Length: 428
Ligand code: NAD
Image (tube, rainbow, N blue to C red; front, side, top):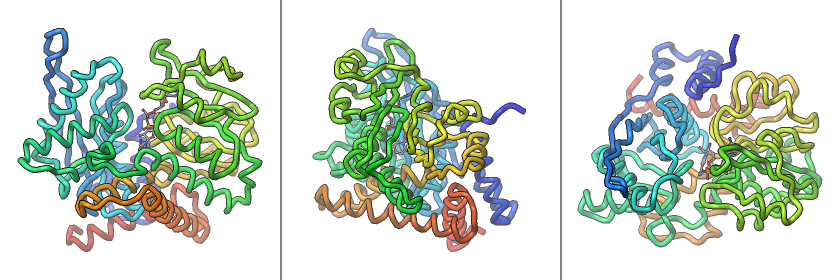
């Protein structure tokens, strides 16, 4: 039988598995397997060369039992209806497992934003808001940045919404630049959140951080701060990061067995997470294949690029040393790879728990926008650590008590809390 790699099928199959463990009512199960509502629209843009280009339907599927919906907007060429549906579903579980009073959503445009000029990007962002304006709002649906979108883009979107609403409304979107209602600590939030999870998992597994090494897929927002946190907070070594080279249209891995200098790599990486490989070579790194990140002799693997990267096939390449997989990306693991992790006794921190740091600080950003009072960097990171540590330990406790896989335990916590909210609202 061929392997399931479609992100939405993976999201549904993970949910179905835990719905059976929980003996969920079949009607409730059906309700939760699908987005509660979806929007599709077109965005016509006048390009710099005068031509008209229409960017096609960008679903924003949402599930709103626990509060206003929340989720990123992706500008990525391989975005599809199903990736966005899967990501919206994972957002619902993410907010629930982190105990944030929000539902899940996601949006996407199938475009490589690096191919657009600054003016075209701004038109696309404003056009996105114009198309969905009536269904956005601090108490309705609050987007955020994701792959291919930036703080500057969130600033344009907030401005467009504020113009249409006739009032300054910073809380309509998060991940804004600090100074336009953004929160300090948002840029590090997801990567550091991954590391707070890793720290707690290492305590549980009795691993010595100072002797541990890690390999990461990706070197964008999540991976950069996860790599930095792994070296600075855990005290370990990062021996490999990989990235997508837009010029060569190929993935590469940057390797240094002695440990990569992460701040240096950040300095030679562009805003889309592409590393300058010539400059990396000058400081003794080797440039290897896109899959080399899987083959390193490391204890910790952090996929932090795209979904469906760890498959039944690719996990065969993992070294026998790997003890811990921290899913920085959304949906990086297929069900076949999950089976292999279980068989090998690898401890997995599931995506919607592992990368919940971003949405947690996004939530803090909304709270600060509501109060019109802004926290210090230290206060944001301290509150983030508390929230993530609590979430991790709640899931771990259930996993140990019920003797279930960490992913299943995280789903049990999340589904339980969404179903409870639905019951309280009288939906069931
Ligand atoms: P990003 O666009 O900043 O970085 C993506 C990185 O992945 C880049 O370095 C890119 O070169 C690399 N990449 C792309 N294709 C690749 C490939 N085939 N092989 C190797 N590297 C590849 O994105 P990000 O914000 O860091 O998000 C990464 C993942 O984390 C996504 O799954 C995203 O949904 C998830 N996530 C992001 C956040 C956030 O706050 N940014 C929060 C939660 C989850």
